[in-house]
Image (cartoon, rainbow, N blue to C red; front, side, top):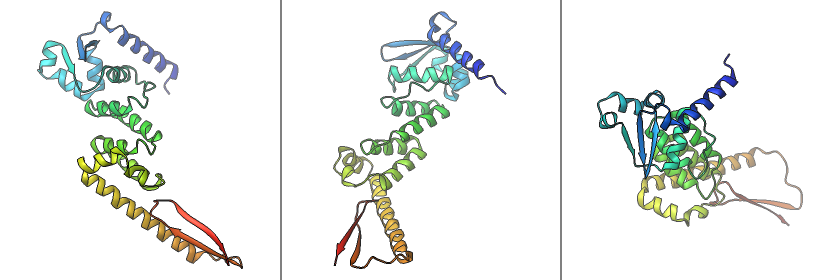
Length: 231
């Protein structure tokens, strides 16, 4: 059985290597925005199949010992590199998780991608679920499925989403995905109605004398209105 303390020490030492890379045998430089980040080919290649292919093949980056990183910001790049060197994911937060998931997919860092997706799912809300839906549609099927389920079963009223700029943009840019959401909402409502109908038929509990139990299933996707009327 491995020694947890040894793994912590290894992670700490590799973080020190990353932080002191300019003076510790760095052999390639990552250029991002206006910054240069010295790193070690062997570590990047060992952790990322994309970097491995880049450095093994006779590509320009391998020859010039410089890699241009243009599609993620420097703060996201640094968090990704800390993960590559140490396995640490403590710096993931809501401001970087979506970009980090994209970077993790691009460089095939599958555990980092999964951690980002789980973090986003644990912080899902009515306000960000449409963004998670689009992100999942592009990069992560599990996150996509989660977002669809959240919309169908966790959002109290569809009008909460329907009136947002995100929904309007989804209808314009991804109409098939928007239609899928609407179909899923209808199916979820129908399933709820069937379950409530079955419960009403199978429930042997008599209605109290003098009362009429009225139950209405609205288009609220998970919300059921109930009232008791006195005869």
